[in-house]
Structures are given as C-alpha cells and as structure tokens.
Length: 310
Picture 1 (cartoon, rainbow, N blue to C red):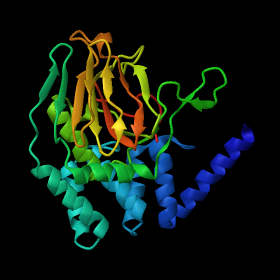
Picture 2: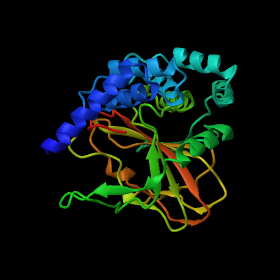
Picture 3: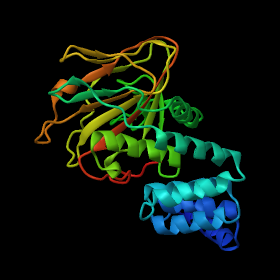
C-alpha cells in the first residue's frame, strides 16, 4: 500500500515537473488525472487549463479534450457555441474537423421529426429519421475502437464477470470523448424528450452480433434520488435480422429502423418506477445491430454523481 502511494506520488511529481516545463504529453496526462481524480485530487478547472496548454502546442488529444469539455461543461460552464466555433476554425485546415463541421451542419439543418405514438400510458414514442445516416456512421466509427465486452463487478469476488443480462460489446462517450457531434446528438435527444440536456447520462453505444441480446430488464435504478425518467435509443444501422425491442407486458414489439429514435418513460408521474416498461433487446439472428442509448435522469446529472467515470 505504502509502496503504491509512493509510486503514485513520484508519478504525480514527475508529471507536474514535466508539465511546468511545457511538455505537452505530460500536460495532457496530468490533465486526465486532474479531471478524473486519479492519484491526485479531482480539479476539473486545473484539468482544463492543462488541456489548453497542451492544445496550444498542437497536442491532438488535448485539442479534442478541450473542445469536448467546452461543449459539455464538465470542467466548468458549458459553451457549445464556442466549442463549435473552435471546430469551424480548425476545419479550415484539418480534414478531421472539416468532417465534424459537415456533420454539425447536417444535424442543424435536419428538422425534428414528428412522434409516432406507440403507447399513451406508459408513454412510448418512435421518431423516424431522427438521425441522418452520416451521423449514425459517425457514432459507430467513433465507438468501434473503444468497444469492450459487457461486464459487471461480482459483489463477492470483486472480479469482472460477464454481464448476466447484456451479452453485447459496448462503450460510452466520457467527458473528453464527447465531441461536438455527439454533444449535438445529445441535445437533439433532449429536444424531443423535453428534458434538460444536462440530465442525460453519457451516450452509450452497444453492438450486438448473432446470438447476442439484452435480456429482460428495467432501466430504472434502485435506491437513487435522481431516477432515470426516460430511455432514448437510437438505432444506428440496418442490414441485420432480429434484434427487436420487446415490451412483453404491453404486447409491443419495436422493429429497429436506421436513424430512428425510440423513447419511453421509466417512471410514473410521481417518480416511482413503472414496471410496465420492462423490455428486452431480442437476439440478433444475422448481421450486426448497433444502438446508441441515452438514459435521462429527472435532474441534471454528472458522471461523478455515481463515482468516477472514464
């Protein structure tokens, strides 16, 4: 224990010294530690300053982190307009950001589709063509390199074990991964659900291959004061069979359609969990199924409300 603490202290001292010497890589790494509270006290403001210093030296990951935090406000006040202006400025000379700028223009030009009401009580709606195909592709490609098998922590052994309900691969877009396009998608979801965009959890992407499924479950959480009021699921692709979203207590099956958004309430009006919206993602028969899910709380939420997230 003491040896681990000594090594951590030595690592912090080394990174601090190198950061003060304008080492961009050290500034970026120390910025991550400051943001997530790894080996040091969590200090989002100091993290953002470190990312800015590294970005000024054209450190690519630091540039992306600075823009992400500016847009989502997880290191201060959110200013998505300023974040998008930064993307627009970089787009003039950088193809990576030029592509993001094109996608931002597409989503800004796309009108919000009308709702197809699947159930009045509980509230379940479907929005066709919610997300243009190019933005669906962006989410999948941004997530692809980060996918990992779905695991949970065994409460007895404290070891990672396969998720008993979800047999997919997945990832989420954490504070420094939420680029301006992902941020715009999150805000678009908030617009159709009538929710505060800050109440949404990190966008979570799941990929299902043949035989994989999300077994019957409810998205509500036990023993929390800030409940998941809504679930929003974007279907990102086509070219697969199976994988419908089924609400067995309602006799309702929702067939995935690329770019479509399924929204449903997890709670009654009084905030209590509504058991009728227990649902499952049926097994995929052929091909791959990709979805992006946003769980929306009753009030603004931070990834640090439930412990550090990365």
